[in-house]
Length: 85
Length: 209
Image (cartoon, rainbow over all chains, first blue to last red; front, side, top):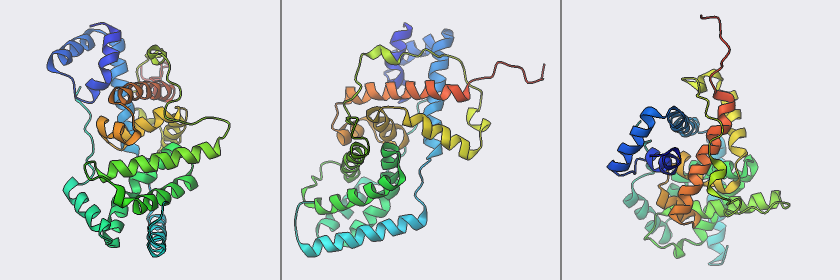
């Protein structure tokens, strides 16, 4: 496997959807190609950091306010009868 | 290296029961759907619009649209995927209004495959996120993801942050599966490269020799 082949398969590899043969070839490539190993490892860390950080949490008070606004607008819509929104 | 696990978003049959009840006019069932997905919609909207007020509007508008169009919802697909599609469209519309000088669409910046080939290979510190405090880290992550074109950012957020499957992401964005995969790869590589500026191993010694 060449470095460009590795890159083609990187997303499938990280998502765990590679067939066994390709996965073995890819892991064999990673065992000797330091650059690809680093790219793979740091890409995985990138995903993990974003996934763990969840930077945009909805605060409870805002959440409650939004939900009651949504529900009251839904009621109004219902009263007005079916229409396109 | 093992594959990265995806989060699951609630049991589908329970979701379907709520949707069917809401279709029959049970507003408490719809409210439960709001409760179930409001945080996700808010995160997706804020990632796309990069603006909190817009994200709040998107949450309201997306649920209101879903409510008004519930009768049209085909139950073969997941309600959440359908809701995400509505929310993404609302968020992109906000972005267009805010940046009228730029055309914002999911199809922009589709160039050749090799423009995202890694140029910067340097390794990172073992626990790079621990070099920064929580608010510094949030700032870095937010600034970094803002640099991606909206089309890449949206795919990354749905797939990697929200944990939708490739197929669900494709359905929510009305893209093909290969298009989602190609954008995801490029988004991941671009983010990796940009984060590298903050997380790279420092070559200078720190007095431990």
